[in-house]
Image (cartoon, rainbow, N blue to C red; front, side, top):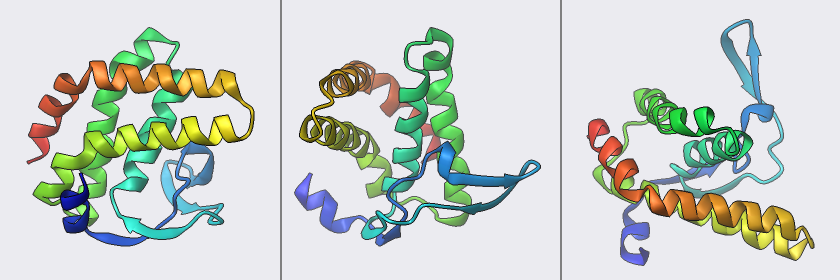
Length: 142
C-alpha cells in the first residue's frame, strides 16, 4: 500500500464527513460543519469515510447493508463529477475503507469503548468478506 499511497492525489480533507456534518436546504447541499479534524491527506478519504459512517449506522439492518454498496458507488460517482478519480484511487478504495475501520477500532480502544471497537471489527470483517463484490462494483467507475 505504501507505494500506491505516494501516487494518490492529496488535498485538505474534512476528515469527519458523515450525514450529521452535511447540511442541506431542502434537497440541495448547502454546506458542511465540524472542521476540527481537517488535514492534508489522500482526497478519497472523505467519500470513503462518509460511506463507512453510513454502513456503520445501518449495519444491523440487513436491507440497509444490502443497498450500501449501491449507495457507495453513487457517492463516488457524485464525487467523481467534481474530482475525477484516478486509476490508483479506484484501486485503493477498498484499502481506504479498511483503514478507516482500523482507525475507528483504535480510537474506540483508546477511549475504552470496547463494544464500539468490536462493532467496527465486525464491519471490517464484513468489508473484507465482501471484497470481491466491492471491487467488482468499483470496476463500473473506471
